[in-house]
Length: 294
Image (cartoon, rainbow, N blue to C red):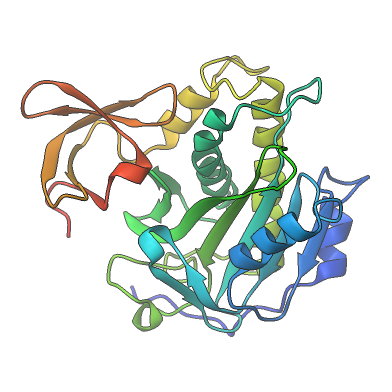
């Protein structure tokens, strides 16, 4: 059945988002909406460095029109007006006592955001989403969103902020998507296409997981109040695990094998054809595909 595509959703409403996300309703410190920008990640990173007091932990910048965004490996991620969402979070993670988390824990934040987004896209009017390691969210095995983390360094010796960017395809028709392996919420059959609802649900879900992560000092193996660790929770949503994968490495070689688990630092553990376990980090790969897919 061919999906029916509605008119582009209403623009982001900053006042509405602030009511739902800022205190007392929610835990976010700052919500900023812009009509258009080149890259929310670039803007948020620059602001986090130039005005750290104005961009504290849990600040967010978002738009529905981005014309110079970049993804992993400097791939283009542009959003036509009203067709999708670009959301960048400024994070300065600290534990329950206020001490900055070790920067080696930051590798989990991309997967944490993927978990929050996959959860938030579901529900009676939504779609069933999964996580593709290391930074994609899929619907029907096609990419509906990508996540990119970068550090915004400081000059005063304090730990860098993390800028976590998320690009979500919302209302695009299939013909408007850049590659056949991409999809949008509309193309996937979601009836929740108001960008305010999509952004609000994602940010609310992320805030809960982020606070738990910080309260556990960034330890993804430590069980929370629900009795489930972050590593277990993410694994349950991950499309990649249990499948044979082909990992393209920067030197042009491929590693093929079965993706079996996540390591304690978020690396993907692959049992290769040599029967050895390989811990694959996001920075070490060019592409990862399930065997038999483009």
